[in-house]
Length: 179
Image 1 (cartoon, rainbow, N blue to C red):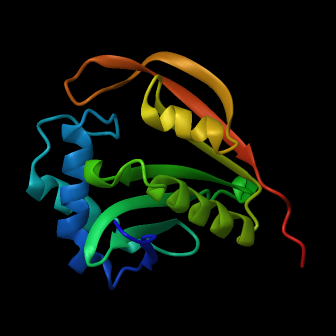
Image 2: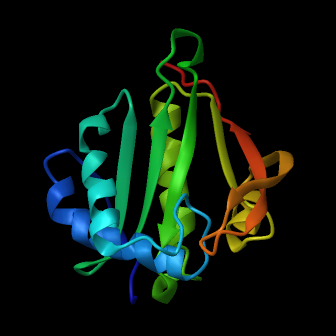
């Protein structure tokens, strides 16, 4: 990567074309041991189907999805899952922040995270939360990006090999949008 990646928002119309690359990115993360909801038995077809199934939810009211590209190559993604209940419209969950192993250490995750946080703030969300495997590289990213630890639950999620691992939950308060 010679320059900053291009970050674009994916839509229901653009998701089908991106699904194979998103599937490859997800498989790379799982193969690298990331605890992102899947086990090592995940196939390319299953990963692609999972991404395609997300299309109906890609709206300003449910899920917002971004992709980072280096040239024409997809190297990262993040989701913002917006709470829809009447008493929770001030909050959202950050999910599936993935960066391909070959693109890590270059600020891609930080840019994706900042993009999602800015959208959340512009959308009137004042509270964000996320969870990640305790001790992971992602955990240190969130700590240095201003997220606060809410707590850790032992044996919360299985890693790709099926071993139960602790999960650290984070939250971040965003300023109330003026306007």
